[in-house]
Length: 68
Image 1 (cartoon, rainbow, N blue to C red):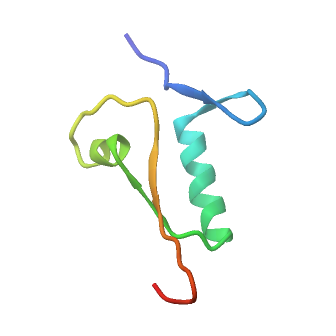
Image 2: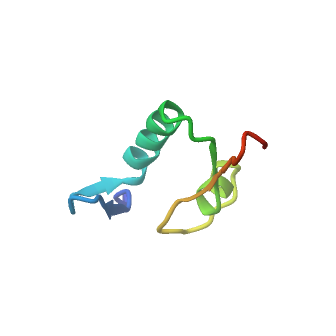
């Protein structure tokens, strides 16, 4: 039995797959100069540990005053 990829709702209420959402983040965050990394269940799954989750977690770098 093949399971469908979980979906979430976009701001307009349309379903968005996690793959689509991650693709958008990977494309748009760098364009906006946003430094980030994927953390949490999806990151752990990428490294071979199965962890069921229904959300994506990101760590976003916030720089103030030109100092990191």
